[in-house]
Image (tube, rainbow, N blue to C red):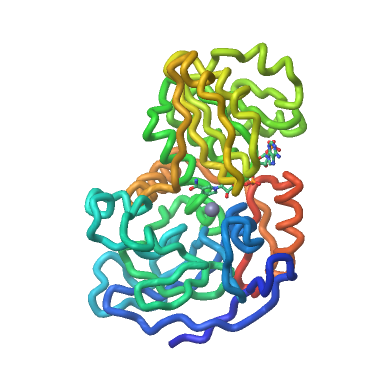
Amino acid sequence: MYNVKARAAFGATEPFQQTEITRRDLDEKDVLIEIKYAGICHSDIHTVRGEWGEVEYPLVPGHEIAGIVKETGTAVQKYQVGDRVGVGCMVGSCGHCEHCQDGEEQYCEGSNGPIDTYADVDQYGDYTQGGYSTHIVVSEDFVVRIPDTIPLEKAAPLLCAGITTYSPLNHWQAAGKNVAVVGLGGLGHMAVKIARAMGANVTVLSQTLSKKEDGLRFGATDYYATSDSETFKTLKNSFDLIINTVSAILDFDSYLSLLKLDGTMVNVGAPAEAAPVHIDSLISGRRSFAGSAIGSIKETQEMLDFCGKHNITPEIELISADKIDEAYERVLRSDVRYRFVIDTKTI
Ligand code: NAP
Ligand code: ZN
């Protein structure tokens, strides 16, 4: 076992504290990764605060992990000591179900679904602890390679914000289409950059126009405030695809009215509350209301290579570990530009 340093939540709204956790000894397919950077995702906040269900404390969040391989198990084939690697939202899955067999482990139908990087129970019966830490042990099957052209601190947010937006844009074939991105936060700003690089025509729908210059710089051609009711009149029947990244419930019928015939609104934002939708909003334009969960390991590698090739990286604010509580407050106020990343040497 390895004793490693971490920052943990000791309660839903308690301040983060320095602690020590253990990582398992290397199994034959495991790699020990020295974590260099860990992104802060809004999902960390939903989880820590118990919004998605009860969790055990102390809890070390973090599923946007970038680091360096320090040791490898005896049967590891893909990675060597010194490799630049990442770990995202999953660290395991059953491996046998239809979706695991098809390389879509994020939809694993095993008894526990995919094993989340934190706040879950792994194949050894241990409670998983995430990336706000100096080291992690993960099976090589759930590790991806970071292209040399992407600095490690900028790679971290790609492991969740990047793949969660790349996957639906890829699945619903954004290229050449009119795509709206709702919410310009961590996921939203990646959606804009990736959709543009895929060849989509991108519009941002943000609460206000305060980030308009940024949105246009990231690759959007249009930018509208959703607080202005005229927006919904102007943009009626405009989009083939809407990617909703908002962490709260919206008036979904208003957004559905912005879709063209056969358009799809994909929700990646994951508020805890039920989402009310009038069926007529779907019937009237043969529209679809959909959702999407992160992306597979194979697709995560594909996304990293795509970002490396197209020079796509997130806008980050690098923080020390004692600033996690402050960062959470700023994310909750939509005051994030556009992803907080923890420099783990400060843990
Ligand atoms: P974030 O950085 O906080 O971005 C969310 C953005 O939504 C905000 O910046 C804000 O953008 C907008 N927003 C926030 N509250 C709003 C409200 N009440 N009404 C309208 N707009 C609001 O969060 P994130 O890290 O990108 O994560 C976004 C959501 O995706 C979270 O719910 C997270 O749990 C979820 N998520 C899902 C998956 C998945 O697999 N499906 C993966 C990762 C994250 P503007 O200021 O531009 O309006
Ligand atoms: Zn996330």
